[in-house]
Image (cartoon, rainbow, N blue to C red; front, side, top):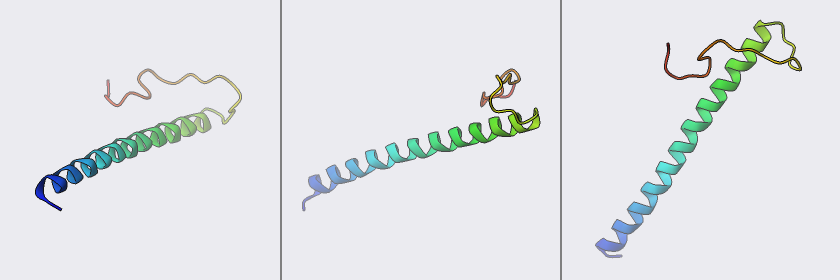
Length: 64
C-alpha cells in the first residue's frame, strides 16, 4: 500500500469516526432529555396519559 492509499483509508476512517461520534452525542442528549421528562412527569404525579406542561426552556441546552 502506498502513501496515497493510506491517506484515503485514513480519511474514510475519520469520516466514519465523526459520524459515530455525532450519533453518540445525539443519543446521549436524547436519553438525558427523556430521563428528565420522565422524572418531571413522576414529580408532577406520575400520570403518563395526561398532557404535560414543562417549564420554559426545559429541554434547552442553554440556561436562561
